[in-house]
Image (cartoon, rainbow, N blue to C red; front, side, top):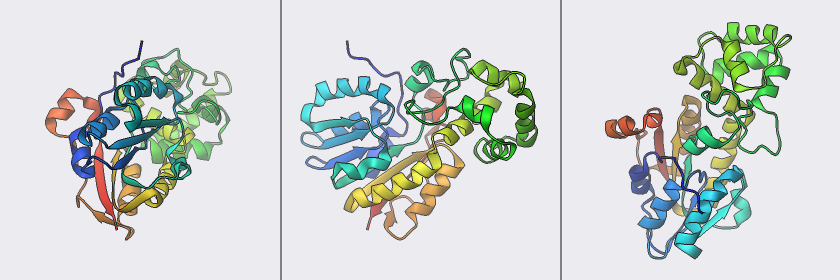
Length: 282
């Protein structure tokens, strides 16, 4: 049986308005996830538009199988990172990035993306085949690295005290699971935990460095006149995208970022921090 995603894609209508998909053109969904944006682009570009979708989290292959069965040759999925898009050898009419975490990853990854899954290992890697886990980062990193992540990525007001606390406690009870980390934080308030988990995830996946490389690759992979749409969820991500869009290679489609409507935020609270920026390749 084909698996159905639990994820509710964000700003779908706005992404379609930015990309303006038409039949006969080829688009790239650089962050496939549950496939919501891919489906919308395929439907909007019927009958002959094509979408190539990428995702370095191999668990998304289950959702790709359903779209492949439905859309056939119009859809192609690759389990690679978007920084590798140049390997495809394709020039696209439109490219989109959704830098958020899908509900499927939060609920069923087994890698600690949700602080409600307390017995899961604190991994937080999108690709668990290589790299340092979040637990290893907390156990092995020097004080200044812990401070940097909690200050710059998590934007926690008590970043200095938290980093010192983890340094002290890890000698006795090193972090291995989600529960271990929450215990060391000493606060179960989701408003406190969510940014901390996000900050650790950004670190272990090198999300900001990857975003810069991915945007550069997208610029090279877009046809002249091709459109780029990027959804961010963190101020540092948005700053990178904003600066990139203003580097002289793009004409802004919207001068200001687009935020979800009040109705969308009510129906999907995870969308509240989302911002969409879009531009046209000159």
